[in-house]
Image (cartoon, rainbow, N blue to C red; front, side):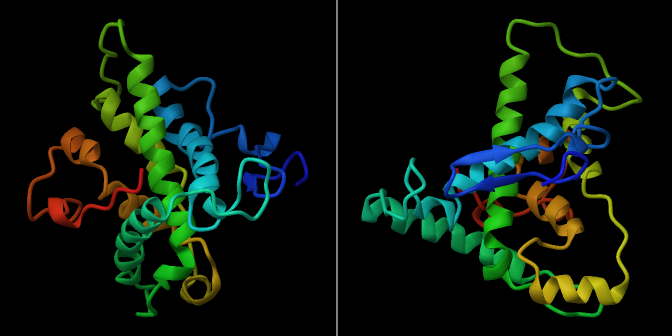
Length: 212
C-alpha cells in the first residue's frame, strides 16, 4: 500500500498488520474526538485486522505464517459451528435489487468485523477502569458514541449496479450490513440504545452470533 491509501490489512504469510497514514484521519481516527468515538472507529479497525489472524482463513496459518493446522479438531469444529452462524445471517441480506449476499464469501470479513468490535469495546471499557464516567456529548452516552463511531466509518453511497456487483463478487459485505449486521450481534449495543425484543436491531438471544 502507498502511505496516503485509506485501507488496512493483515498479511497471513508475514503475520503483520499494516495501517497506512491515510486511514489515520476522520472518520477512522480523529485526534479531536473523544475516546469513545476513536475506540469505536479506528479501534474496531485495529481489532478487525488482528481478528483476521483467527478467521476462516487466517486460522489455518501458524504463528510463523506457515500453512499448518495448529488447532485441536474439537476447537476447529466449534469454530466452524460459530462461523456458520455468521454465514447464515449474511446470506439473508440482499442488495437493493434483491441480489443475495454470499454468506460464505463474506464470512472472513464479517467475522473480523464482529471480533474487532468486541475486542475494541472490551479495550474501551478496560480504559475506563478507575475513572469517572464520561459525560454525555451531544445527548449521547459514551457507550452510544462508541457504536456511533463504528457506524460512521461505514457510511457509503452505492449505485444499484455497484451494490449488486459487490454482493456477487466481493469478500467484503455491503457496508450497511457491516454496520447493522455486526451491531445486531452485540448485546452491549442493544443495552446502550435500549433495544427491545421485536426491534429491528434486536436479535433473539438464540440467534446472536459470537465467534470470540
